[in-house]
Length: 211
Ligand code: SF4
Image (cartoon, rainbow, N blue to C red; front, side, top):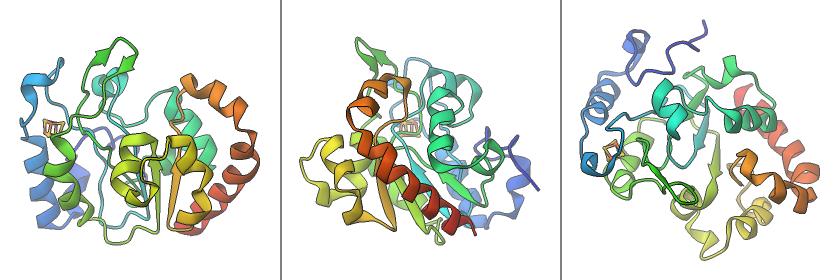
């Protein structure tokens, strides 16, 4: 059964098959107000978690559209990410297959050059606890600098390009990616190896993890 309509909600009714400890954790996340004073549109954590999930997508933080819809990657970036992965929306929003846990769970606001970084309070407060409720992850997609700094400490002070170029060092369990935003079209043009070499392998790894 698909749950595409429930992915928008942190703790939808169909999540009753979650272990009580996971339900409790998600309730605690939903009640979090740790950095509320800094969130221009208020608290609205957007995550997709299920103990059966096989792939973990780690993004930056919700943008304004995701804040409004409550659906992670419900935008042009999400369309491109799904294309990169070779999967449909239905699969992407199936919590028993895909977990989506950004570095900051709430929309942090927008600055002069786009969305602000994820709130720094979020990862230390929640990240490890949430990841402990995902015991079956076979593949983690680590998108952008904040996610790479946390999940790939070995990447050191490398830029996103430098880290993504070294993707074979982290495969097959982890794949670093640039942000799939249309803002990165120039990056994609400048780095044709990404489309020619990494993306075909990514599709293979995604299919294997979901098999
Ligand atoms: S961004 Fe994270 S730490 Fe901040 S209020 Fe939202 S859930 Fe809590």
